Length: 472
Image 1 (cartoon, helix red, strand yellow):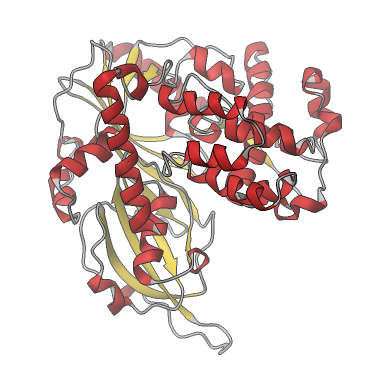
Image 2: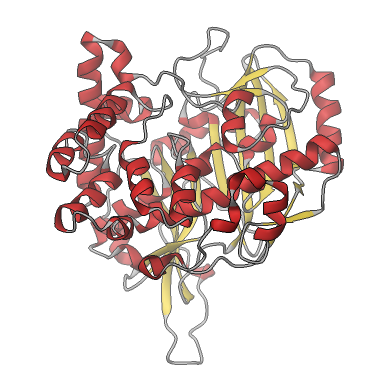
């Protein structure tokens, strides 16, 4: 339940804070993942562009704003609005087998799309599959996107009180919205910079405007531990035991040390699923996916495929992440030689021979594309994606603490990939000493209504809980 998930999240953060009172290192990662060369190389990006300095992002929610652009070119704004807008209603369908579904704009901060959808489903008493969306949006950000809800009338939304989420522009459409039904996203991002050379930045942006930027998959694709692609490779090789071992006990310096320690303990008692469940149960939010796999293993101790089926979304994401890792390696090779194809096929049965010639060390011929015990993975669609993507830059605005970038990207392209061609990008804690931490209203600075109007529209949590979420 999402209300429970929120409570579990806050309880887990509080527990880490208690531990940090006696040992601050327990609540910190040894190497917080950054958008810099050593970390990008771990996800297959070894091409090194000439950087213009260092930058820091996501100091606060208001530093990173994402607004979805629908298929018809409408920007879903983070600005508050009325709960209903019947001007957007579709006409009743001529085919009576089709139904009108409720569609609504969701503005959120501090939650991933998954978490926000779970919260909405819980409050409405719906199954998750009754709510659909076009794309995933960042958690450490303020974002706006359109979602479709089945079997709910818009009046039902008026009684909702969702922390850090508000809904607007409810209307009816024919059919449910599906993943990918968007053109792209509009970003407004403050990059807090160590120093600024406006002339150099203008020159680089002119070049990117003409050629686009290299379309690498960014860190977000690979999970907080940067292990998703490694889990995915084991899944694709049919080595389900190894995949589960990485899922549960894969130790990463990019994860909080307290959680690393529990994974180390799990290795020492491997296959004692009851005890491992008790260990991970100390942090039910941070280990929520692992605990689902463990519950399956308690019933079927040797059936690792069943444990993977118990976490289908995570397994699918890992499966895709390995293909993304291979794509990044190939694009890095091409960028290094300067011979870049207009588009590159994603890893799949039809392209595996081509990939194998370029990445012989990966042993790609051993991949298993059909696994009856994991039928939910399906068969990868044969498709290519552009090696470079364009960026529509509306403005770059200097402030006393850095630069505000206001731009549009097509769906599937990462804002952090674009910005990482300009800066060595940092995020999270510890905050570098050169970062200016003053709050900036980046909406007002570029001529939009103040960000405060959006912040005031969120049903609020108590101040101490709001701080806990912001620090997560």
